[in-house]
Image (cartoon, rainbow, N blue to C red; front, side):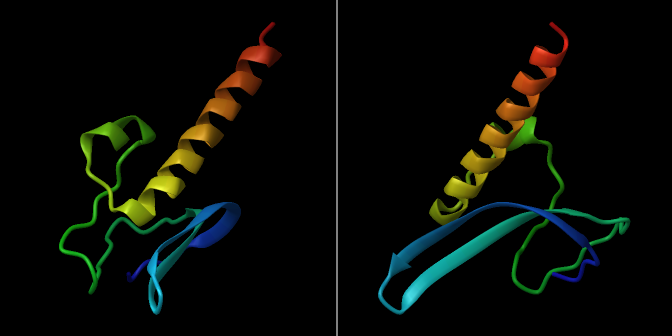
Length: 85
């Protein structure tokens, strides 16, 4: 992916596959000012919100990362709700 980012906090990781055909994904929150992204590995790239996750089919290796993002979002909402009490 051709994208300049500032790497922020660790989100999670996932390992899938068997033997020497394993995929290890490590996810970090990141920020970018770029509006255009190019990729040599994927047919399509698209920014989506966390609320749109259910509209897409993700690869098995992506699921633990998606779950970690959702849990992080829930924790943030719970902290906000607690601070408003």
